[in-house]
Image (tube, rainbow, N blue to C red; front, side, top):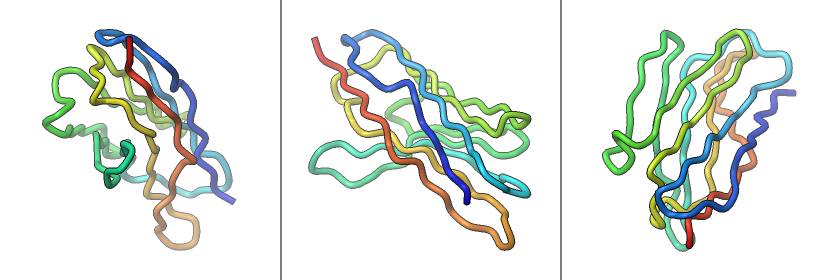
Length: 118
């Protein structure tokens, strides 16, 4: 069974930094794209950043220049370095992976809370 386990969320003051990690465990043949999404209270889940298997990255305009997504293919792990955090970044952050077991499937983490507040 494939699982995505996230870590690194917490409470941080505006202007601070956090680093999220997400590791894919289980028997998986290959992982193509990986990404981070977030969902703030009362809002729909939104895409934050993505990275392909050949390490091409893309970002939502709201986080461009502040967040950096990276991945370690050997560890099946994706990271999200978040700098210059703002209160509007407060949300539950979810890890996503497109993985191949017998067929290609979408996999999601359980979510980790990020709160930006003074």
